[in-house]
Length: 176
Image (tube, rainbow, N blue to C red; front, side, top):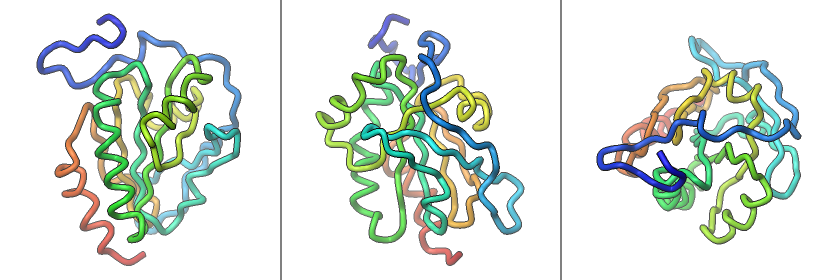
């Protein structure tokens, strides 16, 4: 698949076509403490587009959508407006969207995020984080995590806002 090209019916891009540049961020593989959780979300600390450390544990007690994506991935880009909308609509109800970029040229990401008006944290992936989330091999790959830090859904490919809402609404309604 050529960069930016998408075939009819195709909804994901193979990560293997793009290689990550050097790891410039720190990853921790300890899971967030979760009660009665068989699939805890691995914690991480990554750099955001402003070079600040952001950890998954910073959002403990919130429903989290983690979206592995890249600027060169057309389905990823097509899904960003839905993620922005979800963040704006449910952010006050303790939902947070986190975008984790797999771009091999990280310098392009801050400008892209501003152009797309991404209102949620945009972080830079490391190989350790990619491995700890099950060796993400296709993007977009989205994880939905409950308030207790448990992975409830893994979605590969582009999924519309209505489908994401179907998964997050019950989690938002739950108490910790």
